[in-house]
Length: 100
Image (tube, rainbow, N blue to C red; front, side):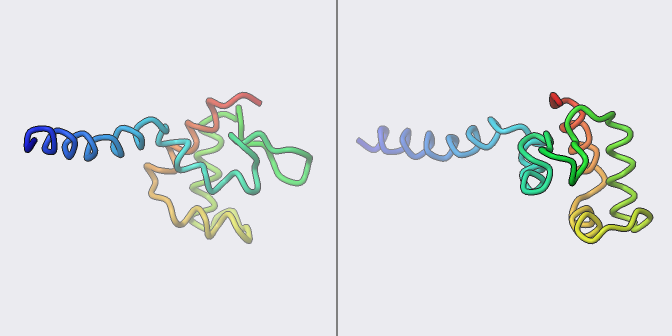
């Protein structure tokens, strides 16, 4: 009985980690973007630019400019400051890989 309990405990400890890995890092980071830019960056309408399918370098440069304040904005400047440069690169790659 102790062996079964130990096995169940070991399995339960690994399941949450496996579930987290099932969601790509870029998708997890981009979750905060969906409210304004739509699911997977496919913005509806003309109010905001779509992110999906844009060149990675262009997206990354814009995000860095928002973070540094070089490109002023009301919301994006604050959001971008919450990401590391590596996370901004992951976000840019994620949105660049999405379909328009």
